[in-house]
Image (cartoon, rainbow, N blue to C red):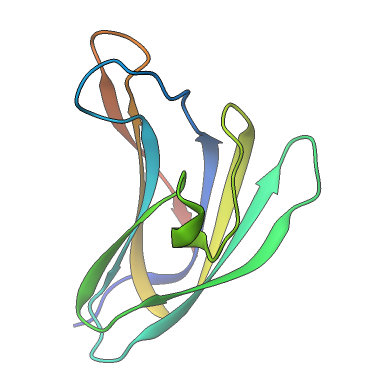
Amino acid sequence: MEGGKRVWYFADGYLPEKVNNGAMEAHEALMFFNTHCVDSKVVIDVYYSDRDPVKGIVVNAPAERVVALRLDNPDDLNGVEIPQLTQYALRITSEYPIVCQFGRLDTTQNAMAYYVGVGFAE
């Protein structure tokens, strides 16, 4: 059975500051897991607390694959740049049901932290 949902929301985006504090680089990532036997077109909308949203960032979730997008890398978002240290939220809409996960690696302290942001799906 293929799993997942077609619409996902992640409310707590905030790209951590880049600091030279070791081998790991601070970032946020968005992962898609497509268990279907067909590719799924995925649309990302980015909402901010202090500016207009950026809507319609189209990416592909290949069939039976995992995709990891670095949210600090405009190349992964078709040229869209999410500014560091700015509150944002994501809405993910997929052509077919997929599983989405959001994670942050914060290296601004000596004891780096990685955590997963829980999303809401419908």
